Length: 82
Image 1: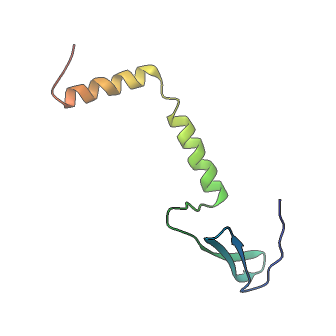
Image 2 (image 1 turned 45 degrees about the horizontal axis):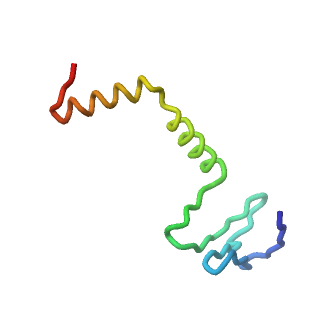
């Protein structure tokens, strides 16, 4: 892990297109400004981990759930099968 010390209004650069600036320091909180291209997703760590957990859970759908969903889609398309 790289550890850097920055003062108020100072920044760090990540690659060619991501810049992180210290905007404010209040007590034990630091406010950061992040300039990055729109295609770069930026999340707080706990949100990122929650998204990963949800994606993982969704990828483990049961076979019976998928079969029921498939039957419902067929029904909605007008091709109801018995």
